[in-house]
Length: 398
Image 1 (cartoon, helix red, strand yellow):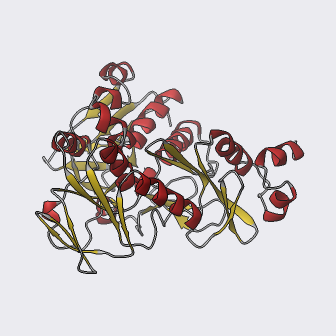
Image 2 (cartoon, one colour):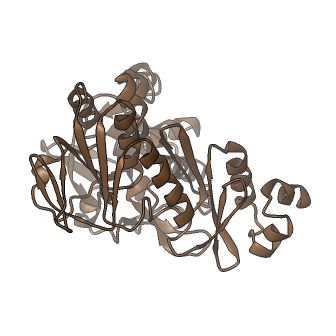
């Protein structure tokens, strides 16, 4: 495909990358990138970290305005798509405008989860640049802050706020921090780090009610706060796809090439559910790098006809205080863990390595990604024979 119109709905990192990669692959047709936020596409990960400190919105921009003009990418900001007509191959915006496509890429991402807690109108979100700008303004004077949710976003924000001198308490319903993505040992280490900073951590007790002056836990305990951040996770934006008759289940279902059952529609990033290349199980990744890799794979398939299954090694990171957490691979909460003497954690599903967790250890992280990208699965016996040394295993396999 080198002609016609490709329409991308969603102007986040994945949507932007799809447009850029299409041009890099040689696509010469029209590209329209539609996003519901104002302004240019920007990076979301720094919102809870670097932007909180600098307040420089321009640093977040993925590319300047000239990039879109030079690459003939029509950027439609502040535009929300209301419906997809798969027969006519067009979408309709909330303003009633029809936009035609020859191929549609859905990069609709996620939105913040709103759990069944009373009083959520008293909380603030941290998902968009507008949210982050509001938070920065409210942090201009000392605050008592309650964070509902002990995942990446909540803990990143908590670390920044505590370092700035605010009183911070994190309330997590699960028995440990970041329990969905981290081993118990690594969760415990991060709890100790945050508590050493002076952050209060409440685990294993859900929030029952939010009040203007704080939160009430299920235990009955009250946490006073005059700023309450809701960071309880996200849910994929699938309503547009579902209304158009596409299959959805915790995301838009796609095949190993990131194509939906409609040959004229693909999906990528946080909203897409695809078969895990290792297990075949459906998986949805909330990861900037996954969205970027998806976009590149779709562009190559559409322009070059290359339909290799998507099989990139997932990886994730989180900056909390002066700790950089990096995860190579994808583990489940039940995967076993081996803790090395240097603190790196190796996760296993049976005898198969599923993930490697590190703190401030880029070398081990990159070794893990290179090894896991190979055709030979990494096993517990092979790693144990090398003293759990990934570098030694790399040398042995050369």
